[in-house]
Image (cartoon, rainbow, N blue to C red; front, side):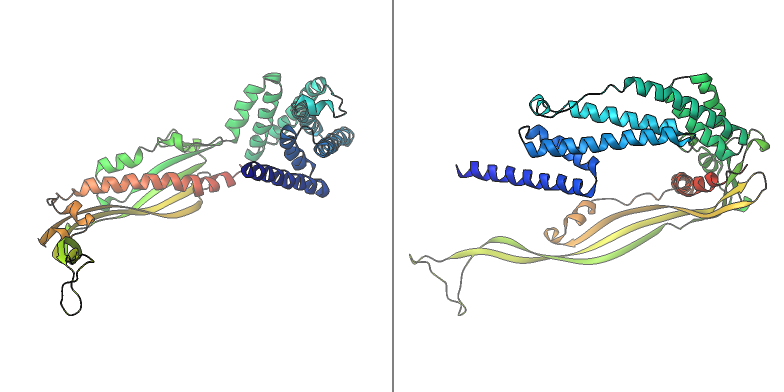
Length: 394
């Protein structure tokens, strides 16, 4: 019984909080949030008169706001007015469908009149498509790259409203093509570096499909020089491969472990007896020790240079980013002199290993090159593409 009243109290408490939240939203004039909260609550409490009244108030306010917005846009003369009118009619329709999804018992007790917005939505779609189509064509006439991109986004909206309106798909292709910049990625390797051909070929095998965006296309193979808007050049100017390094560190491991039993004695060395006169025994602990030699084998390779972005029309250097990648080889094994019970789990994992063969120079350089490719992808997405997108005035 106590559990039942506790559950009832919790439910009532949560319900009161949600009511206070929705009323707060109403007082603030945030009718959309109030409506969203009340929709969820009326399903659980269809008999609540307060919920029904607040829900109806929020609904009426939101519908009135959109109807007023429609009237204002119709009178505004704005060239994109029908797009905003369409959005308003769609909000009216969606909200009404949400309202009609309220459980029948609660809906019957609300004085509510349904409206059919389908014809207004169809008319608005047609008018918005014509309106946006004309605006997009004007952007095409201006002829700047940013205008072609604006036209592309408008044509996309037109196609979503009225598929293939006035052959809009072909205009979409044209706007995207004219709004797209083409970037040639190339590698400039100083002859003195003597980088193996295999490594240069791996760097050159960039997966450009990962880099392309809606208005940026990359190439690694030259078509014709005047085809490109930008050149992104990886200038490799230094590489380093360390010697094979073997280093030994000695550590002293010790540990107290349980080893059998012993008789408990007092401070005077006398055997302690239990209530029955029997000697008391306790676990016996001993300290075990071992000297551990940890042998580390290390080798590293570093490739460094700059990632340079040039305007291909003016040959102006737009960005110059330092880039460096490193590949590390680390292998460890251990040798133990002493009690094996003293060593840690980490040492146990490497104690039986044998020395490894150091990687060849070219193998390590290839790993560094692969790491550099990852960096190039990240740089292009985070920095280089921003620079490219910002050059829109051609």
